[in-house]
Length: 154
Image 1 (cartoon, rainbow, N blue to C red):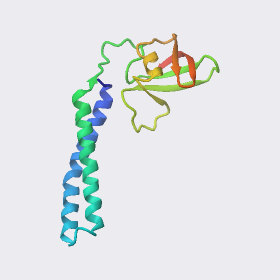
Image 2 (cartoon, one colour; image 1 turned 30 degrees about the vertical axis):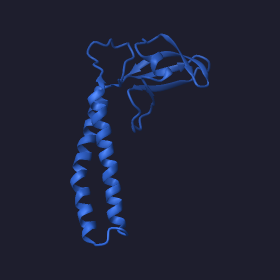
Image 3 (tube, rainbow, N blue to C red; image 1 turned 120 degrees about the vertical axis):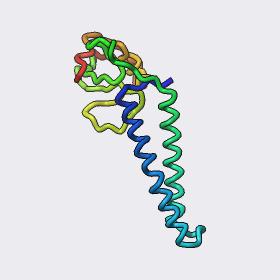
Image 4 (tube, rainbow, N blue to C red; image 1 turned 90 degrees about the horizontal axis):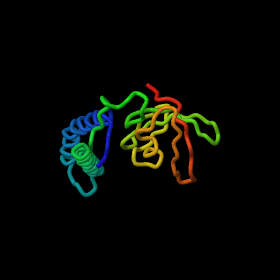
């Protein structure tokens, strides 16, 4: 089961609305291209049909994710505890380098000033329910890393 934040759910619902709005436009493009004649060599028709297939596949994927995902509530989460949707500043114990990370259910297209970490990744698992001031250990592909949780960013 996928765990998503309330904002992730809202983004998926908005994306689904936008895809539903595209359906009639694509159908109209298909009808217009079909009216141009021979379908075998009609590039506009084939492009519109391909786009229709991609949109329908994305709609099915989003509907399935929304049906099966568990939305994490944040009402009972202490303010100093890392939970899904939290953006945290971590200090690499070995290098002293500071970096911001956001704990997400699934990777998004956000262009924030942070690195997205999924809750099922090694770093995400280590971060979940950790508190400010704690040192966490994550077994990453390039070896074990230790981080101090400096702050939870607003």
